[in-house]
Length: 445
Image (cartoon, rainbow, N blue to C red; front, side):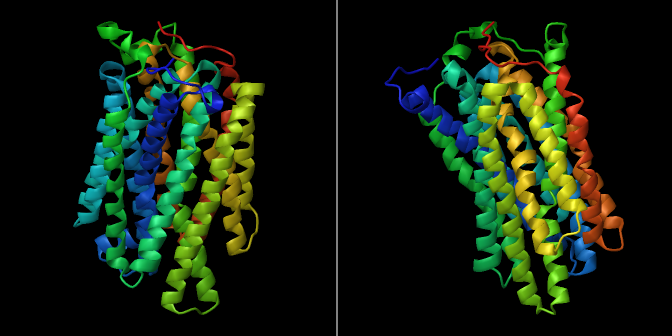
């Protein structure tokens, strides 16, 4: 269903439907972009705000601890924002909610650039996290309701490809600012990285001008009064719990691994540089390069994995799709952090982690909206996708705390990350309980 009639083009979608997909694509891409900037600058940002000399063992330990704490707080705020704004988008509309949430996370991220201490940085990250969490439900619901029924899987997966692209952009901007333009001043460079978080504000204004509310939502009128409690009535309880379980497994795995990519890459580079007796500046530059390489491997794998959800979901169904990704995720995590690998070789493992741990998220943009009727679509999708973040928040906190407590923080981080591979294995046992939506149309009532 479309707000504007027009000639159908690629994937049986007209120009307006592609405009809606692009708007949501940009919203989610910059959502991920803003959400992960801290993780990329943490090795310089945290020690600077705490008054610790960069590159020292104390700096590494503090970075692990605070990366875990701030990532966990981000997830809590993300979860709150997702649930709150999921309900809001069912009440006031998808487009308005998309605009509000994009402005919220853009301003919150930019404010991090002027944080005078770690506590103010924490506050600004919480502000940004509310918008980051709220954007997803609005964008996913809007796309699902506007594109043709038979292209919902393709549109949903394409929507999520903006996630890896957002990470590519975050990686590139961080490297250019910290590793090129301001590499001689690491104590200030990270502040300029956060300023780049303002970019989505301009995109939000474009969304407001060109995108209308979906006809499916407009047809409900004032009759739509979604309540979260309704998700646990007999009609929706099993559907809700199944969607929540899949999202929770994916979220815990993703955040436990991804949050520490820059830390692990920087640590491996520092150990290699020390073994090769490299100068401090050269060692720091190597750390930026390895960090970029590891994140690019993860992002490229994620981009490919996201697209692979399309044929698996369409031809084999949603249950088979989740089984495939969880099994591959377990193998990739256990192999990357369990095998005896050379420092740089270990970074290649992030491609396979991205393919599975990141790739599975391409399914949630079409699977979760399929589970609920129009009046509950934002509420239900937002609840399932974001409630798991409260549990997932424990992952980065525990990984960071345990790793920082060891004598060798870098080696300890790798050992702890190995055990994250058990989480997707547990997810395999939950798949039989979820609702299969292959071949079903969206429900309007």
